[in-house]
Length: 144
Image 1 (tube, rainbow, N blue to C red):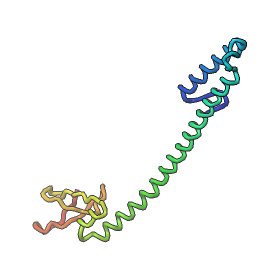
Image 2: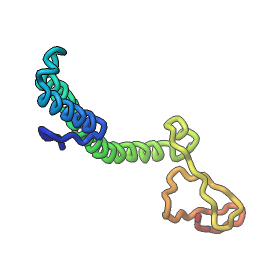
Image 3: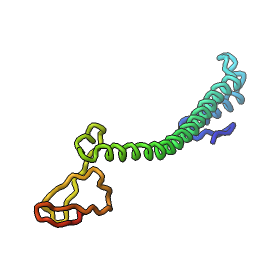
Image 4: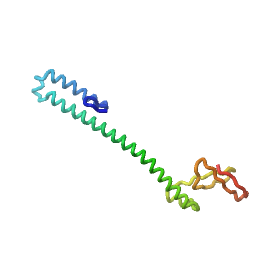
C-alpha cells in the first residue's frame, strides 16, 4: 500500500532513496549547487514523480485484482450457461451424435463391461452407470 513515503516496488523505492540522499547533500552544500541551478526543491520534484508513479501502479494492481475477481465470478455463471446449452444440444442430437461436432462437443467413447465394444454415448457423465443392451448376446450389461 502506498503512503506518502513508501513504495512497494523495490526499484522505485531504491531510486527514491537515492534521490533522498542526494537531496540531503545538496541541502548541506547549497552554495555549491546554486551554480548548477539544482536545489532540494528540484530533487523533490523527481521524488514526487517517483511516488506518483508508484501510487499509480498500486492503484492499477488493485483494479486488476478487482477485475480478476469479476472474471472468476463471470466464469462460474457462464460455465453453468454453456453446460446447459451443451446438454440441450446433446438432447436435440441424441439420435445422431456426429452432429455434436458442429457444436465443438466431443463425444467420448464408453467401454462396455465385457470390454469388446466401444460405444459412443453423448450423454455419458463420469460416475454414471449406463445400462445397454448387447444385441449380439441378447442380454443387458453395464457400461463402465
